[in-house]
Length: 219
Image (cartoon, rainbow, N blue to C red; front, top):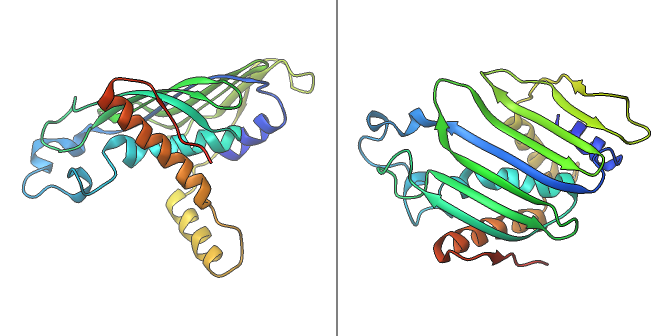
């Protein structure tokens, strides 16, 4: 679905990007008291990771958006909090507002351990001058079709949908990394792309701590 969305965007069906809304939500049950007994896992301990939910999961959608649009996030405002559990040392919820450098697109990312017994969890919606693209990566344990609509002269009329099956992303990335190490293919993620995503994360934490919008370092 993501490759298909990239094809649509690169073909001009979105037009000039205007806005993005993104939700990356994990199961709240992993923070239930009975699951947090004893020593905290390293990913929940302050100082042992780059941060909490924003760094642990939110970074993936930041990287994905920048790849989809071929653009970089230029400035961010953010809030982080523990709204689900006070037992972990880093944040379990984060909301990021941002503006992109080239297109001027404005958007939001919400990430946290909010999901209870399934329900809509992960989604990305993009709006542009020629249309929109929307997909839910997980919904009640099942994928939903990629949906889009465009007034581009080469686009079919009305709302369109594209069915897809979710591959094992972890396995695909592992295979891609091994093949890169063997010199068989380009890297699945470049150092520059990784650095660009993490700069947004760190700018988000600075914005949350200071209460002021932060510019993201470029280059």
